[in-house]
Image (cartoon, rainbow, N blue to C red):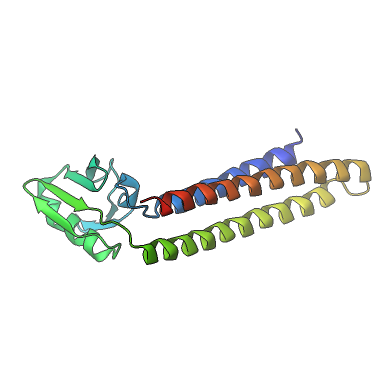
Length: 183
């Protein structure tokens, strides 16, 4: 594979990671640590993400309950406030040395709103992919100026990568929509 095609593939993989990250934060009615791990908590005079390695471990006790166990029990109030202030629709409750979050069932209306938001995120991802394609095509024309056979071959190679990626994005969307509609 040509270095330009390899570089394009790497850029596409980064775009896919962004899309997958965006989709993973969307609530599906089931408890998962991804729902809260990127919430920013004000603690120790600064702001820190809630991720497992930074402030607390995040566990799932059942399909609708998350349990956060802070490494430092003195910041439990800050964790509760941070989750409430993140405005993600959760009501954290302090229970001894842990924070419990019950994940409410999604209404049909809310599911439809989430599907619309998901489609918007996917469209933004497709725009990023098209931008990578545009940049790659410009680079090919600049790099292989005058060598039409090489240009055509590389353009086909890059277009194949783009087509596969767009198909993959569509599959991600269908899978997430199925999750969102599942009761």
